[in-house]
Length: 169
Image (cartoon, rainbow, N blue to C red; front, side, top):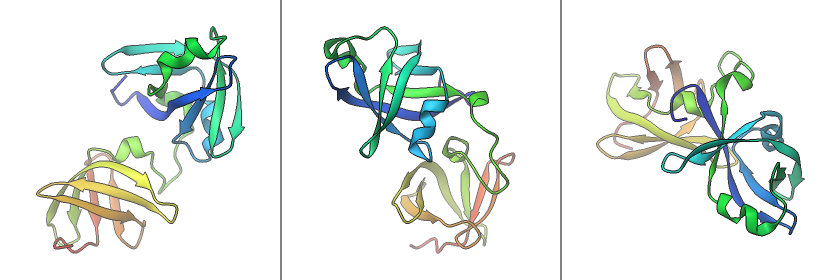
């Protein structure tokens, strides 16, 4: 599931109630969208993946809760805690122009507008105000994902992101 045909959309973060429901940390925006991308592939690189059907789910507090087919009590779902949730890329809507899935950005080379190589995108995270690109090269850099201001160009085919960023920062 680690190839580009699958996209990480969440993680099972805990148990909810006593009837086999799980808490889900969703990486989708809005977070409830994860319930529309079915079925889920649940697992990890080390343990393998299995297809799971979501019987029902809903927003709960700052997360999502879901009931997965075949699970009826809290002891049965305990083994799922910490597992990733992936979906096939064709289950997701096409990204609009100047919109990107984080999975497509990971691994891109990052250069400044002056041609200085900073490294590769390791991952991204959300701060609430804006997303942050974590670039690993000679050192780790945290670059705000502000398209048009800091991020000047993204070329997925070339595998390159151009940033207006001081390489000393």
